[in-house]
Length: 392
Image: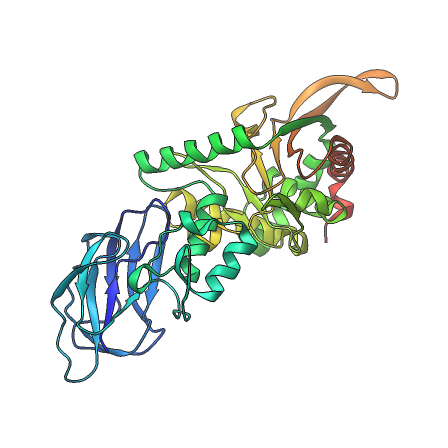
């Protein structure tokens, strides 16, 4: 049976995709799950795998072509089959080629599960389960499978789109970011906890580890790396701060995945350092440097933006004394970090000069209360005062 290869929808707001490379050429034999082509969306460069086997025929999109989502760009055919030419309109409203026999539409992912029928349309069982787990309304998801079926990748794309700002072209990127921050600010009951902490130990830790990590890992240690490491360790003791608000209830998260706000030329993205509490400082620094580099060149993958459970935003290098940040849903909190600057403070009852930094925690009152947030900040500040003794 002929299998149509379509431009997949990896993001809810995606309208087109750009063909960057074909991994197979016209007439080549293709195995199931074998890399077929590489496409570029507003958010990432993604390798698309074949959903079945066959001979690649009818390639209609050349490298560099920008193709509407859902449009057939090639076919996988059995020996002796011809390229279908019947033109039909799919249930999603898009016009695309179709065979006289049903054809499965290819999308990013290894396979298409068997579909079930519901009031939301055709939904694969795994996609339905993932939607329930992540609080995704199936009515808001556009299916990319055959006949508009909602697949696992469609749900994962919806979760990723909801959880992280976009990194695409100026218009789409800024619009999506504004929509998400507006939705978070207007629907999440934010409250704020502010602490000022002596950064003497923090600066000493950076000095202590900087040269060794640059030699061993080839990366420059930043204060952000230390903040991520200490926040991740504090989150171990405060699982509610690492929880999420999903389907009107609190969902605990097993992993501590810290998202880092990174400014790009056109917007802000929040790629994630997964399982940050289990990583050594050098590993955190390497991952932060890699994510920052790919964010600024628009090379992040969808997996880089998914799964965050807590976020940090550091504007210290811009000499910002303090600020408040908007929570990235469905996370429960985000930590805003100001600049480290010398201030006159009381030291053992006498005036002295110390490097100080202001931390502002934005928290979701549906998930945590003021006391929990204050205790988290207390433990975090204790760690930041002497991070060397807590680093493995």
